[in-house]
Image 1 (cartoon, rainbow, N blue to C red):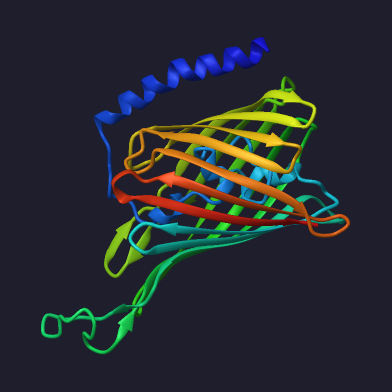
Image 2 (image 1 turned 90 degrees about the vertical axis):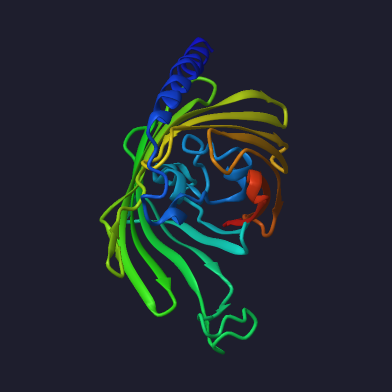
Length: 317
């Protein structure tokens, strides 16, 4: 208990000071591939995106690859995530985590995409937004990843993901690649974990004749079981992140579980330009003799942009 209090206390004292100092210089709008920073999964979003030290389901392929090494080696997970984003944008992701007998650890594949409905092409001479030139176009991003993770001891695991990234606008397109690294350590007290991840380490993107970097993001955080009794559990999580094009950010969240059937979640995104409070609910129900399904919903306050709604469906079998 003293270790837990000391850790949360140290993070609480140091990180706000670091975040405040970072406001001196921000490089907003100088990086490409911003969709890579959109969080995956309704559960994580409802917990204020404080998930790097939780990472205990298929969405760990995004948050912290090391997390899939802790999943039941006798089972696989298939997860579908969808978000209704502001400005009529949509974000979808699918993930599959599995194990192979001859390969120690866990493997995962994932694909995510930010896209929009086709838009009418207009010109200076044909500006009518309902007719235009008679042609339509679309735009979007996609990333596909392959992940490998394993536990090196009963307390420490690590994982790596390779991503192929594609972006397109009408007939123009460009590809690049990136890597994610993650580690997860079990402290051994009150289910406490410490997680760290570096995402989107990769090359520049050249779109038409302009070059730009993709946003590498560093995350570190801790999670712990704050309360546990017969059929009830309260999980708390705290995270600090450092994006290259904005000030440092803090995420806090909690999840209350009732008999592993009903889940209530809440969290807050601190120092974000367009994200604030979040909350959500989850349900788990059996779908076969040995399988279960989880349905999760999350609401995120996007400040002046309105709100984002996320839905997730996960199968464990």
